[in-house]
Amino acid sequence: MRPTTIHRRMPRAGLDPIDDPTTALSTIRAVMHRPHRFETILLLLDQARCGRTIVTVDGTSDPDSAVETVELVTRGVGCECLGALVVATVRPGAEQLGEHDIDRWLEMSEIASVAGAELLEWFVIGSSVRCPRDGLGESPRW
Image (tube, rainbow, N blue to C red; front, side, top):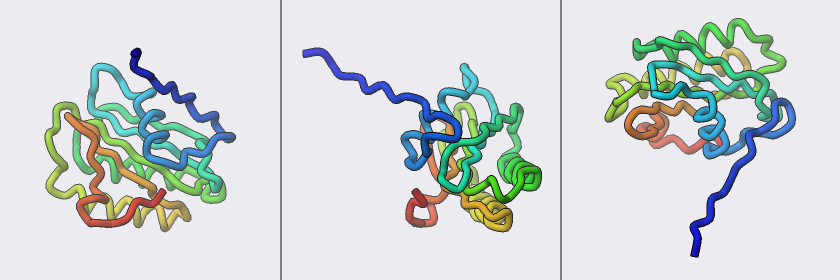
């Protein structure tokens, strides 16, 4: 018996919602640099959670870079078109979350909320994928 592989089609901008972590991660992995390097990736979603823009910022080795990137992007986007966002921080070789990542999650959530959007998830990608939201025991926002 041959193993079955499920091929997911990339969501089409403005048409297909990104409404679960699997779709979000597959989209992020499609734009991540190989080999991994420090970068922050944001998926900007409209009110229907359809992708509108993907922002990638290279060289974000400072752990606070994710917060700064969310702040800059939410300031520069018209609030009426931004309904939600997903953030991914690539930290090559990192084994665990950073000491203050839960605080960063809370800060990014607040920044998004002030901009009229919801931060759905923050994926920290190193040797594995982790979500600081889990450290709070907070329910998924999908």
